[in-house]
Image (tube, rainbow, N blue to C red; front, side, top):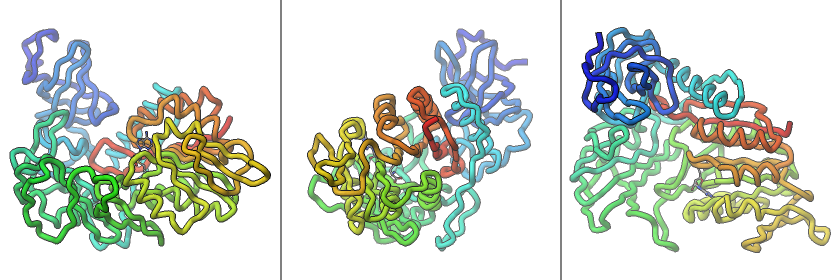
Length: 452
Ligand SMILES: C[S@@+](CC[C@H](N)C(=O)[O-])C[C@H]1O[C@@H](n2cnc3c(N)ncnc32)[C@H](O)[C@@H]1O
């Protein structure tokens, strides 16, 4: 007997529905139906019977939070975090699922996106990301991994955003945060005048930075451990505190608030995966698009050697500065500053007057290297969640000659871009997926493409 006595058309947020929960969908929820209408249900698992409260009503679908589990899935576990659950912190989506089940849910989402958006049939296995043995902390499985946490501040109190809302759930501890972030005590202070406080720690070196956004004059409370502070966006030309990250024997400077993989095991795992996929050889020409602080760029530079060439492209000024510093021992590597969509069509590899050179036609900067005429042997691209898009894909498809490695944190935009690559004659050779964000719906992907 449904609890709601309204018809579908006059359902309102707050109404209760009895639902049979169907499969998982992209976004951290499952799909159910109420009187023929699709309901996206959070805090539920496939196969469950739940009583769910409607949170959103639109013409096409409803959203609801499972508040009472009538018949539970065997994959259900008690959520470790006291702040997770209906209407609470929106940071984690799958606290109520066992870790292997979380990975299976993510695999289903990826398979479905590939099939629906790109017409590709694949069986996907989401691999666990091992915690580095060098880290002195031994967290509980799935917890203590997030080395960068952006807390929101509401009237001075710190918390995390609720799902699809600007409202803040006050928290005094975040269980997925790395213990190095928790050590600072950010959540146990008041931050009047500040809009957000980001705790950044390197699991490898222990370096710590706190990034503040909001009024520059806001009072900063004393934390439990000494930290270096960054206020807002750095002014051009100013030195901003950074953390040193380490992958294998290389150190990387990452300016406070700049991009770095948040799971301590993710950067080394992705480097190995990209190198295994591309098999770069001495003398190769490689382009690394959206290169951030130069993580892949540096290891590709080592592989291609002094007779090769690696060009990284990045738009964020502090990241470009970091990347140039991080590859300073590798003369065969250069970092171009600019938006990929504006730069990629201008990259040119060829032999002018008998010498091998690559030239960015727009900026006029040239770099000596072992380039052969035509395109780049290998291209890596690691765009933000929005993906690369058709224009960039078209350029990359024309630029690469041997292989393309596409690193992505969004199955939907990856699938869309794979379909564009397919139209340009590139096929998916292999796909790996990594559980770099346990407890959340997020996943890191590596697609390797070959001409086919
Ligand atoms: C997902 S991160 C990848 C960074 C790097 N590959 C790594 O693994 O550390 C994406 C990077 O792309 C940069 N970015 C975003 N949009 C860009 C654009 N349109 N052109 C160039 N870089 C961009 C961001 O600043 C960020 O550093």
